Length: 268
Image (cartoon, rainbow, N blue to C red; front, top):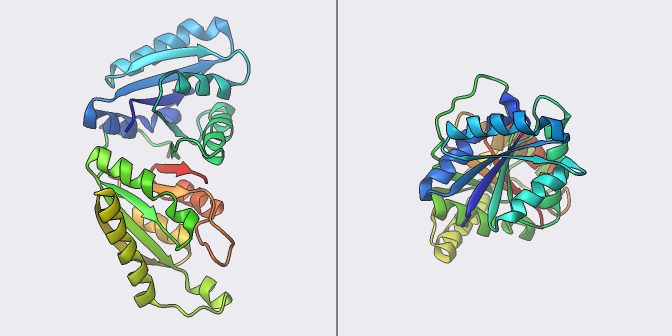
């Protein structure tokens, strides 16, 4: 599925927290893992190269440094495009504005542009556990809209590639349904999520399970994944309209902030 996993870094422990996930994914098929340190001054190249190579050696990766001629995001995109089928895995913030710029200019430009998915992780700032993470579940929230279901191929492909299961979840939000004049029904929701699980298994050949959650979507999904270090979320960044789709960009962002697991993100 991927020929390389690329981890952009800003030199901080924050930006390094995604490495155990990237290393665990790469280990399944011996996929190349590359760590990239981007700087904006030629005078910083030597130190940045030493940092990237030293860190890479500890994780069975290659270390690289790029000096950005313009926007740092462009340098990261150029490196990602140099090797086809590269998955960018990155944290959503680091020690400075660099990683915030990366999230806005690299991850979100790829996601919102309808390109390849990007794996994004919000760091905790705690002492990182360097043990590679074996991902066993790809949690796929669906809300009944075509747009939320557009994430199915990416989620199923990732799960099959790493030998994980797809865990389809749907959320019943009593408050939203009451506001829309729609009756809450576990039976109807269970029927939908179960049928989607069966469809995914049949069409994509993946191992699939399902679950119905209750509450405000971002809260319910985050509570479901917190503490599950062996899971990743797979989510679109937009749904349809507020009353028709709970899984809007704000929900994806909420899950990124609170779920405690990486989010494989893309947009239509």
